[in-house]
Image (cartoon, rainbow, N blue to C red; front, side, top):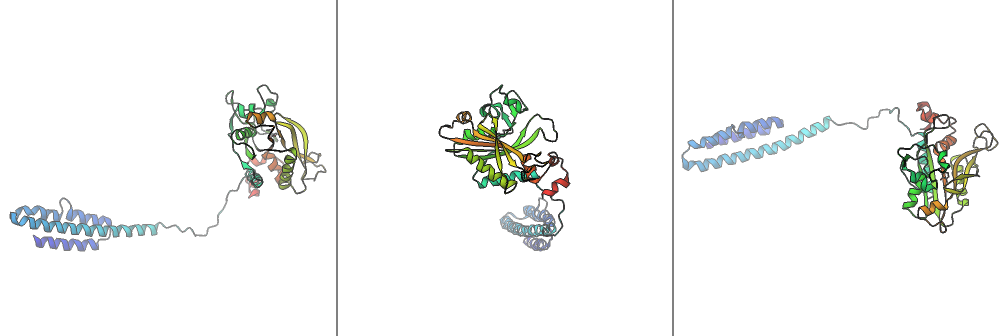
Length: 340
Ligand code: DAH
């Protein structure tokens, strides 16, 4: 018996070393060490030995089993490693391959402009605040000094979801959300999408974009507003652009103005872009109404502020000389690829 165990161990060890795959190794394991395997059979045969020889024989078989199990484990990890290596080689992707790339998309002009505006105001120390597109009546109107039945509500034909929930009609709602949370000094801009129940035509769309600005601190005056907007117009239109304020009315600012920039197309002489006036309206603005500050828990005798809000689509069109406001939303690749 000792002889047979020794032979089986030697033969099997040689097969283990020679075998070429994990599957083959598994066959060897089953054939020798399995329930009906050859070594198991030898173990079972022990019952034919005289009782005094059995412990010795048992030991021999166990040592053989252990030797073979170790050999199998060693071979198995070597084979697994080799197989993994082979697979990695076979599946390798050459990312250095030089293939010309076609049709890379670009940013929409409106996105480019929004990013540039954010960059411009960030460089002046403004933070960017986001606020929800689905708003409550309170933030969109009430807190902006536009109570129910106020005629100013009619200027903005609003999409109501319920009596008190709506799609924001102006980014000005974000002023209130910010002033409730952050106390002065405040310097923020908030670009975003707004909604009004307008029929789409050459100058109207039910969805458009605005950029809101708000500065609140001690001693802020209209001169600060004018200074910032001059810089803005010169940066985005041309170095010699001028701005002018025309008296206007917004419930959340007092006094309120309409801001015009001198026409960059004709330099202010009058052309078809500015409809002969030499000026192009770019936004509404003014000094934050005392009532709005009070509603947000800011003392209007200690702090003053200015706010402005302009159509981002309009500013983009002026800056890039886009004459038809519909074109940017028609997804015509011949138009879009000019902005790469
Ligand atoms: N929210 C106004 C609108 O949609 C624009 C506006 C005017 C915003 C004056 C302001 C402002 O912040 O001060 O027509």
